[in-house]
Image (cartoon, rainbow, N blue to C red):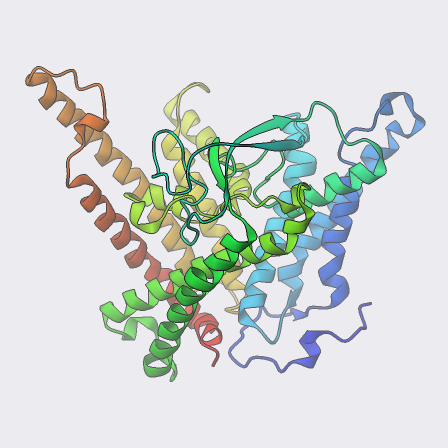
Length: 460
């Protein structure tokens, strides 16, 4: 299979791609081996019934961990040994897949089972019809499935969602094969006990129909995608095509390009999410047909930087950042501050998550820039946003304390935070998060321009 012709040899290489020194074009075998071996290891991850009394009790863990270790090594090896010569974007994605895949393997087979004694269990979702009309406004304790960026209620079904965790493990090889495939494909852990927070979003929700998703793609997603692509192409063609850097542009154009790139990414993710949801809808009620919302708040509803990253952006890498960023950050803060395990460690949690994201994205950037020189733009972006979240939370708490004192001095109790809000809080919050995302986002855009990714996105 390694000698089979691939797109890497059939399509012309890009002249602006700067792969890591010593890497070679990706082959079918090198691309398929890591996920296939990972799947084989997953087949052996759930405990076997009565395995302790069988002669194979020692063989199974050894075989499983050997396969897992091999797949992890092959995942980590992908971006360090291979590149996609005809695409800057796919080479960057190869780095993300390799790093994410390797970290996921370590989590599933070594960190979670041996440090926390946890093997993911299946979670089954049940949807009972409810009587809310599709036009029911958001609120009253019921968040809407359609509080997404690109979906609006139409003929989707209003439901109350409940989740039930399986007590046992897969029965038989057919069920085991399905279990392994579901876990391998579920980046956010949907359908399992390590699902991300956005999957556990609400009880009262909406299930969009195929018609809803098609309408979303045609009326909302594609127009945003095309407009943002056109803006990106025009700015690049007019101002950056001759080798200029982002910093050569006026600050206003830098911000416009940054916003266009962000809108393009957001709509592209939504397009992929909705497309796969439509394709797999006929498999319902199989878990692979379950597609929880990718975004859980509209852009104009957000009022903070934390709100943007919690509800306004996807969480496809949530588990990666939790295990390798949030948990170490919390542990470090508790150690340094002398806190107990029961006390909150919010600063370490936030900074750990953002710093891990900074490394992951910078690692991907360095694979298309020929090395680490110039690849730290993404790191500065995520690190800056992490600091911004910590700062805004400190300011928020200080303002709440001050307003609470003022209210008590006037005879109120000041216990209800909502009653302490002012009419201008939302306006200030929106201006704040937009300025932070766009200004720090220039670091991201700068790296993409330098790597040739913006040129490729513009179709040039």
